[in-house]
Image: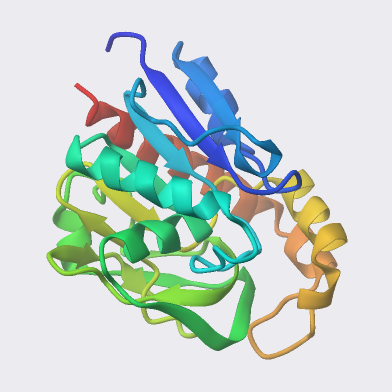
Amino acid sequence: MSVLNIQIFQHVPFEGPAAVEPYIKKRGHQVEVKKLFDGDKAEPLSADALIVMGGPMGARDEDKFAWLVEEKRALEVALKRDIPILGICLGAQLLADVLGAEVKPMGYREIGWFPVQASSDFLEHPLGRSFPRNFTPLHWHGDSFAIPQEAIALGSSEACANQGFVYGSRQVGLQFHLEFDQSSVRRLARNAADELDGSRYVQGEKEMLKQSAMFSAADQLLENFLDDFLGQCN
């Protein structure tokens, strides 16, 4: 594989690329992190692939975060050019919104390690072949999306019916976080402590951090999946 230029959109200081950036560099590719919250422009025209990270804002909070308008335009351009796109959590919600699907609050939060059952159609897709039928990722969200028209549903958890989707062969949204490490959880717990409300689908910081085997499994699944995702750039 030739050297790729991977562009990452970051929405808040405390939720960055985490394990995604070192993976890209380890594979010998170039990575450019666009800090949209700090005035960087969302311009993916020179990118071989685009990765859109998470954040606490909603996909339709343009009145509070004006740069979301520019970001959605950038996603529309990337889709028209068939640039590979990976949206994670908020990134997946933004991708779903641009594709015309509804994004709305669930009425409760899903935070912590909860099992996901993958759909047969997703497992048969080239971007789903690295996933097992059942896996347990880390979640941190209160919004969810409908599956865009012509997209393939990834699967579901008990709390959230739609945990992701694949659109075409090169665009994918993941509602959950495979990229989080323990430092990521600590940063979110500091900056979004009010979300750890002890409700039915919300685990505490200590409960999340003690699952070292789950962090390791998620990291391996992330690497396998990113191999497949970046393989779509050729």
